[in-house]
Length: 161
Ligand code: FES
Ligand code: FES
Image (cartoon, rainbow, N blue to C red; front, side, top):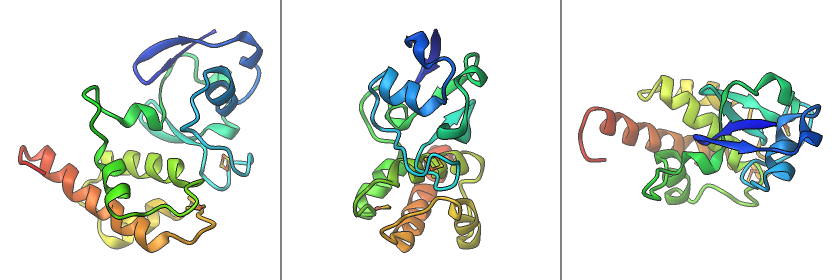
């Protein structure tokens, strides 16, 4: 079975074909950036992008994504190794505590900011409200998303972030 992940066609053992995407990514491909939390589509920690849309990989059948472009946290990193503005902002704002939710937080934020890089504070809260953080890092998450939005808006305008 082949999956298009982070711009590469990767061979995944057929044993994962009838399961959900998170296990094809983590166990089938050994890519540990995608986390597993509730396993029920609730917490958001397993979020990846499927054709650019934030998607919960714990409840997404592999069969539903064979002809899509999947992006994981690893795939947000640019070819030259530079971090995505969301990743950089989460580092700079020292957002994580245990970090278990953080992959999903960043993937959700990155997909959101692709659609809206001039969000209001309320729009950020609304976009991130279904990604849970057991450590309660919500204020820093909100700050980091705002910082990333500024960076992305500046980059899009052709300026230096
Ligand atoms: S592990 Fe997928 S939503 Fe919680
Ligand atoms: S940083 Fe621990 S769950 Fe969010």
